[in-house]
Length: 325
Ligand code: 2P0
Image 1 (cartoon, protein in one colour):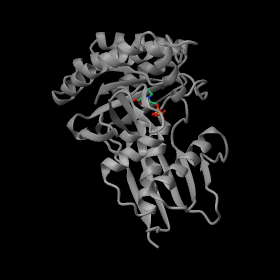
Image 2: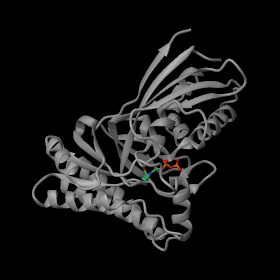
Image 3: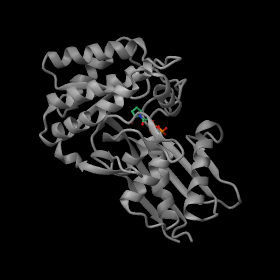
């Protein structure tokens, strides 16, 4: 039975510094690796969820009502009905305040917002751990968007996320350089499968992953920026090495992606506390210590091929608003 007429949930995107890439089990979306991310306060999804009048889900995403991303939401709602034994259909109206489907983890904020909204609307009373498991079933990275700050995915049989440290522990800033706004040609799920089944480097990725997580946690606990930069860049390049060496190969980078990598390394060598990371797409995320973001953004805007930049602080705790019956 629904506890509310309508709920409004805002969840934020997140940026993995040690990344999830590969599935141990695709049916349940169980990841093959752990991961650790920072919540991005400036990139959010807002979902308004209520019960539909008829016997079909009514879904809109940024005013679009059909297509692959809508089908994915429909499938997820079917899964929720199966898991929790209710039959109601929903009206879900979703808006992203940042580019969708182009390597900025819109599925993370989107699926987290939906999981939180269903829990609230249907009065499921799930714990934070259960909510992250439910969000993970929609998208691996979404498990982390249930929390703000530094968030890790714990690798147990039914993997779940939990906060590793609060945003206040170490206030970092992120400048995102957009180099291509087109939807990516190969989605993350398909690309992960291709990496896992064809890249000769995939096993090395899996084998070296636990050490990366250990070092990253050490860097965060000690606020050791040099170590944070070294581990994050290395883990990102290892993930892309498995992607690039898939057969047929997948190359998410544009010439500007590579130019940004060089630029960020030059800036760090010149004393700017910054490092790069790149998700499954052509955009480059530059993570810096607070205070450097303004100069960094100006520098990255000068790199040829950069369309525009976005800025975010570390944060990203979800926000839930309910309209009582
Ligand atoms: C991550 N990414 O840890 C990694 C790094 C992209 C690169 O998780 O198939 O949309 O829905 O579980 O979460 C993007 O993939 O994949 C992702 P599914 P998801 O953030």
